[in-house]
Image (cartoon, rainbow, N blue to C red; front, side, top):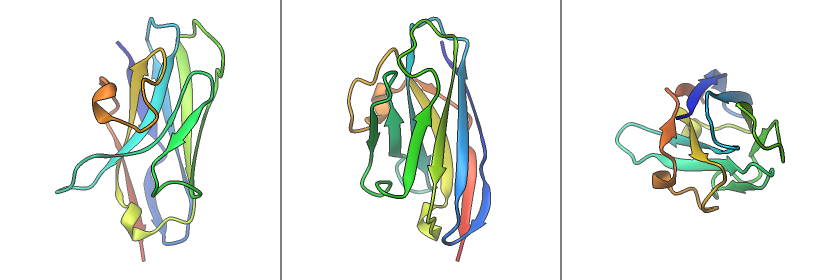
Length: 131
């Protein structure tokens, strides 16, 4: 079991920045892989970025160069709480979505953000970008 709590969403104008936070806690695994996905109503949920327990990151094409993921407790095993951040820059209206934090036990199975790799999900936080 992993509890995930996101924060940091809100409204911003095009070209602006936001930073999302995700606190992962109450897990008994040695560590967790953390990722961000986003969902627009009527579309499939899509990956944004992931970060492994050792700090290895992966981004989908739409996020590369604009979004940056990091976390604490890099290379630290047997933790019970970890925080990940998603710094989003140069936002556009196309980035408007509900952003979800997701977790996979111990390490990231893949680098291409496969939604079915992540059994644990937060409640989501809304990001709205106006033109």
